[in-house]
Length: 476
View 1 (cartoon, rainbow, N blue to C red):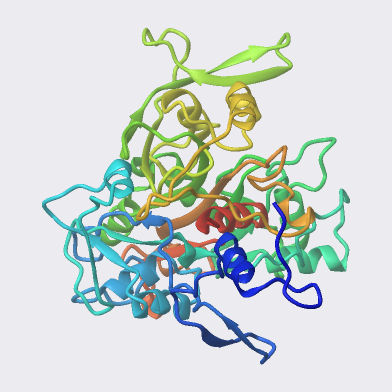
View 2: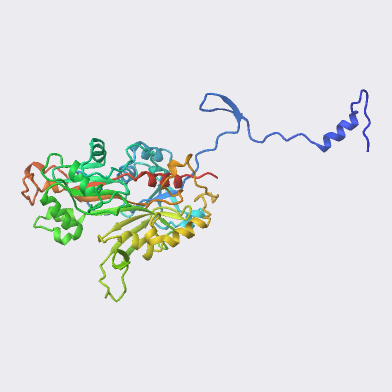
C-alpha cells in the first residue's frame, strides 16, 4: 500500500492522522515533576527522593530486674529511660547516633502480649510499637532498633600486627599502648586484635604476654600478666593483672566465683556480677531465639599427639569431660545465610564457644574452619534469598567499593573468624587492693567513692565492622 503525498512529497492530512494512530504520543507522567538540588548545587528535574526506608532490626536483651540495671556507674539510677538503656548497651557508639534513631522514631518495643519472631516480622505481624527517648524501662522490656545504629567507620590506620621481635621498637610500643582501654594500679584492659597469639613459646615472640611485659610495664618492676586467654584468631577484651595479688584474685574469679569469695560482702556481691559477652556471626540461625547450652566438652589428640581437637563429650562421661555452659541470644534476622548472636559463657573452657556454636547449635562461626569446614563449603556455594523485614522485598547486600576493604569480611572468599569479646563486667579490685598489696574487705579509705564494678566495651575489629555494615543496609 502506498501513501499519497500532498505537495512536494509531504504526506497529506489523512496520512498524518493515520500515522499518529500507529505511534501515539507518550502519556504524561503521573507523578509531579519537582526541582531537586543535588550535592553539587545543580538543580535537576526528577521525581522526589524516596523517604526513609526501614532497616533490619536488632534485638536488645531484656531489661534486667534488680537494684543496679546499669553496672559500672557510681550511683544506681532510680529510673532508666529508653535512651539511657540503649546508650548503656552501645557504649562504644556515639551518643548522637543513638539519639538520631530516637528522633526519627525508628526505635520500637515489643507488646507484652505478643512474641516477636522472624516469621512474624517478615509477614508484618510484628506487634511492635514506637517508643520515645524518655519512656521508662520496665523489667523484661525488650527494645528493637535498626542494625545501622552500630555502623562504624572503618579505619585502616594502626591496624598492623607487631613484628616478631623480642624487644618491641618505638612504633610497636605506641601501637600496643593504643590497644589499652583502661589502666589503674591493679589491672590493664586491652582490645586485642585478631591473629595475635596470647601466650608465647619458643618459636613465637609477638604474643600478647611477651609484648605487654616489654611495653606495658609503666614503670613497674614486672610486666602485667594475662588473667585469661582468647583464641589467636578472635579479638576483643583481655584482662591483665599488674600486681601479683590482683592477678591471683582475678584468676580465681575467672576460674570459679567460689574461689574468689572472701569475708567481704561488697566484694562477693561484685564477683557475682562478673560476666563476659561475645558477639559472633554464625552460618545459619539457631532453632530457638535464646537459650542455655549445657554440653560438656572434652579434648581428643590427633596426628599422634601433635594436635588436639575439642568435641562434645560422650554422655557416659568416661572421656574426661569438662562442664561447659553458655547462654546465647539471637540478635537479628538471617541475612546472606548468617545471623548475629550474643554469647555469654558461664564456664571458661578452651574453644567452648566455637564448639557449642558448631556442634550444639549446628551454626558454626563464620571463619571457623576447624569446627565448620563442611558448612562453609555449602554456605559459599548455595545462594541465600533474604527478604526485607517490613516490606518483604528482596534484600541485597551492599558491596563496598574496592577489594581491600572486603578482606576478611563476610564478602571475602576466606573470611576471618567472626568472634569478638565485646563486653566485660568485673569487680573494681583497685578499690579493695592498695598499691602495697594490702587487702581491704570494705574498700580502701581513699577509694570509697569509687564504683564496686567496672564495665568495658571494645569496638569490633575492622573485618567484623565491615560485615556488620554490609549486613545492616540493603539495595533493592
